[in-house]
Length: 232
Image (tube, rainbow, N blue to C red; front, side, top):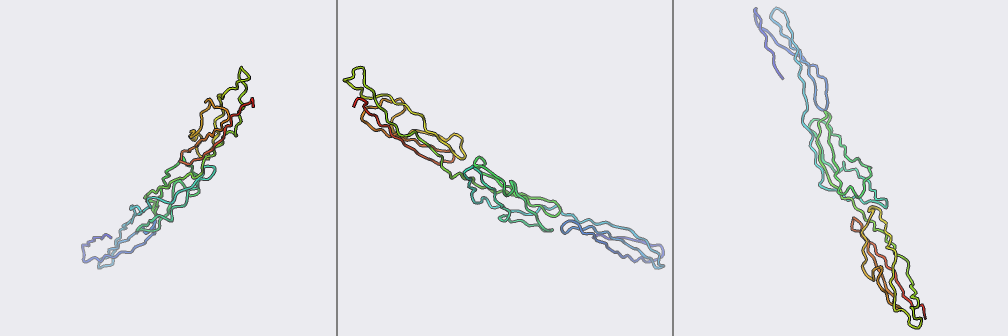
């Protein structure tokens, strides 16, 4: 690369050069070129040229659009996989190093869904390029819904002991629900009387509830209420 010009008042000039190369990052280098001009009488003159070969081109990188889902456990925790093996990357001037964020082995929860994982390719000269892939974080654990125990309600005699009451209002505590990811799953009653309804004697009622967490997982529970005439 480059050339040198020389002249002499007494004749022709011969120009030669000698290079010393120092390797740089990747396939780059720094060349120190010494030019020597010599006339017919053996007189010489020199000059030095420095040629720096640089790499400013980022590497090429390609991520898959999505990867296998991440399934959280009973503690609502999942582990980020190493996705670098799924990424295609290369550079014209040397090797490429891949890193990802969040790092492989990091803990995520259902709240992180959908999870974007960014992969960075860095070549030997520090040039970078990025791509991203998406992982669905799945909560496959059902909530746990616990109903009250089966109830036996004894209806006491009325004011006139010879004429028993035909029923009574019945109340019960709402069912309890827990979930690995959702602090407050939705609970609805799906069948049976509501708390405070008037229930008639000599009848058995079934009350059922449904719990649904934020991921759409469900659980059901039921209990019975047997209303008895205490005067019998």
